[in-house]
Image (cartoon, rainbow, N blue to C red; front, side, top):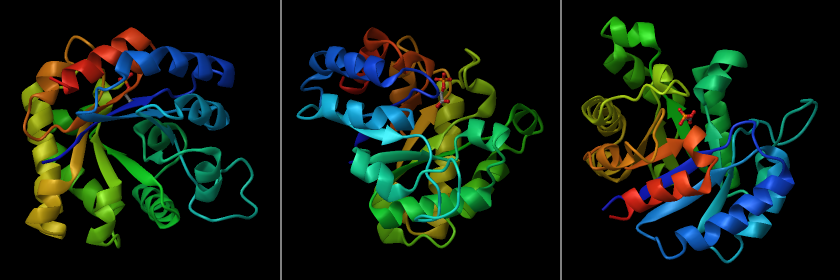
Length: 252
Ligand code: PGA
């Protein structure tokens, strides 16, 4: 009943020219593979070129952050309507690199999510525990708390435009992947939290991705898990063949 969402997170990689060339190469490779939604979250300056290259294909374009105000004196920030007009349909909010290096908190993640949803963007909301938290056995509490804080005040009807990406921080860019069982279990904790805050229906319907060193070699077994409805892919989204292999795994 839930549609799988395979999203690439390019992070700070690829110029606009490179983005256009990448998407032109990828489009025929993923054509007709419609059992999943395919999204590429690209650097801000790539969005217009990427959206142009993706026109008429099954590839959707997203951004990697959004500010929570609509406009004003916020040097260096980008507002939701700017992203929409440039051609983005999705935006990543709360990525652990933003939380780690740029002072993002659950409060600002919540504000950004609300602003993006109000403008009509779909949000890929990232959360996940750090290594010490997993080792201390408090992963479930951490992700439940993040889910509650990040979604505070967001009405149930808006959840159709929210994808949650469960990304254990220790697995991002490290080559360490959560086992399919760990991914399934923690995505399940997030789903239970959604049931507790909203309803069983909301929990059954919300798309929860796994992210953290997902690649062409491990995607199939991660995606086979009941609670894993897709992937947020960093490194492996920068190569058309690797990314296509993940899309293929989601289309089996
Ligand atoms: P990775 O990144 O696939 O390179 O681990 C995932 C992410 O940060 O979204």
